[in-house]
Image (tube, rainbow, N blue to C red; front, side, top):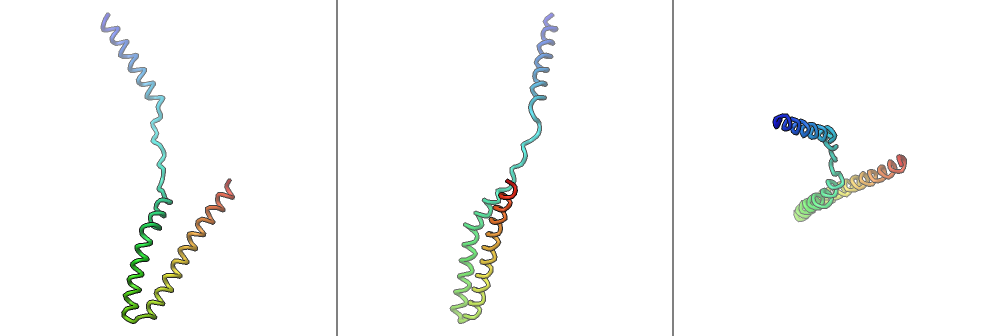
Length: 104
């Protein structure tokens, strides 16, 4: 008699546990992705100033040796490069705005 009651208790507990497990979703949550805004902010705030400082030191070193034409050429190339980067960033934000405008 005790064995029968024990078996009924275990069976009902197992059935309850299995039904609870069956009702919980087994799928993992979707990955959140990469925080691209954080990466861009990091590069813009940490890496870009360091690279510009290195360019400045190189330009000053060349200018002190009398290579003014090379410094002016390199400076112009650097400024054009920065203009291209700024233009690309601007187009990125304009494109994002247009996509939001079209798909709203």
